[in-house]
Length: 76
Image (tube, rainbow, N blue to C red; front, side, top):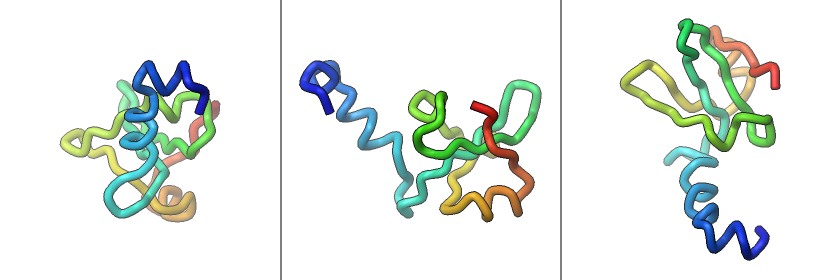
């Protein structure tokens, strides 16, 4: 990580945003229209995607798990 990102606190975001307590890294997000979309590390909106479990959003440990649960992969 570049020093300028470290100083801006991105190290903290990276540590908390990349996986849940079980070590799963795929974020299952529900869009404002109700569409269920999963984001894998490295895609465009992964870093800024937040998971709100009270809205039904969740973490997945594999893409197979996400697809089996009825979620689709993000387009970006």
